[in-house]
Image (cartoon, rainbow, N blue to C red):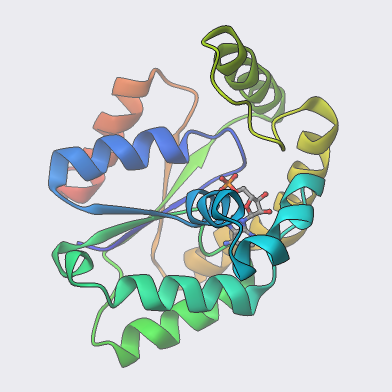
Length: 195
Ligand code: AMP
């Protein structure tokens, strides 16, 4: 089963992707996590991405498309994967469609987690506060100022994907403001054909 989770920063994509991966034995593919690992490791990709990520912008389409294409080819993805944070632009969505067709794969569901903007901002601030309280590193882009820019990038570049997948009859939407377990149940019902 191959799934896309769509949603703004703070919508809960990472949390839901993690739970879903465990429940269904799928691989979670988070481009944000992959890029953060590249930045930490100081690779060429990391050097290209670091400043852009810190500023709340999007790294180049070609870069993330090639990262995802290579990752999907790895054997563990044969059991199915959840895309978390990709695609984020119409160009990425078109490239994904083409690459999946070339690899003989397809999408089983595109699920949008819908959350109000005011709630998103509160969640990101809480994520940063929780990490700090636990003595964990706070994401360089989890602060109020950068969040506004990330939201702008979302509305400019990523929100059109909701229309794109709706037009392809692939979009399903869940209430991302419900408690975590309820959101998980809504997603499971969609995947099990019960909703
Ligand atoms: P995330 O962890 O999904 O919030 O991503 C963190 C940051 O990584 C984003 O703000 C972007 O700078 C970058 N990023 C992650 N995924 C993508 C993508 N698909 N396209 C472009 N930039 C991305």
